[in-house]
Length: 353
Image (cartoon, rainbow, N blue to C red):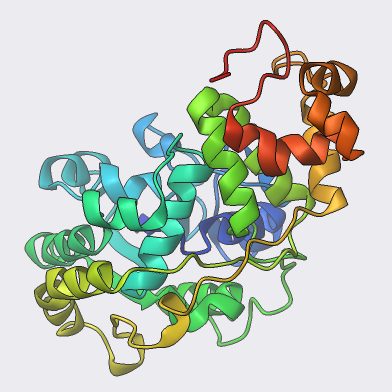
């Protein structure tokens, strides 16, 4: 019997950590009759970097590992690409006799704040959190319902889990789910190597978001590379949540009432998705802390690379005499003040002033 387990994310639910775990244990998993086909970015996954998994192999007509009991694919891209009847039938049901989907979702505000952060980090956005929440519509929970309905329509198993309840032990939860799906002995995968850090794709501080938003206004390529470097080299920095407006919270709660009611009808009590009713997202605005020396040093390194605009501190001080007069480090001044003010760093660099 050809069996497949599809871990489809969705985004911002520990997917990179799970993919690092799978990449680190490909050979060991095979001993348990689990074939995890090597993704193109397996080296990045093993190095605990942000990855996209092996889901593209499904569309490349992957046909290997038949001697294993089950083949496991992991990619959050599958969440968006396979929730339609035609594609799911063509690429999954026509190839496998037993299909199980693992889908992690997340509490609403927890999810939306994280998605907004990702649009700043890698999506080129300059919107503030409240601008994003009042002008954009996030589809993740609605698509969870589409997956649930698809599973009923096409008669395959789906495991929907609330990442917000398992975020601090996401690897343990994932392995327990896989073991149960494949009827493996409880705890048999406990000895496998776990990533030394989770989450792998952390959220940012307010100062980091501010810099990235300003860089996005110039060229989003710079922001995404700086974001990746901060995430990968400074994984332990504690995230900060900008304040949500009361208006945004009220409007969002009304928008999600029916969606959550329908979704929660299916979920076990311990996995139900909530709209958070606490001060975590509406507390008073805290002053934005300064960037650390480590954060600034990474910026310095990147801005000496060929595909970044050159930042010459002497030229910056020459262009802006007030910086030299104040005796401030030009890199720190640019990141904390100059970038927001649109100050030039070179004559050839496009800026507002």
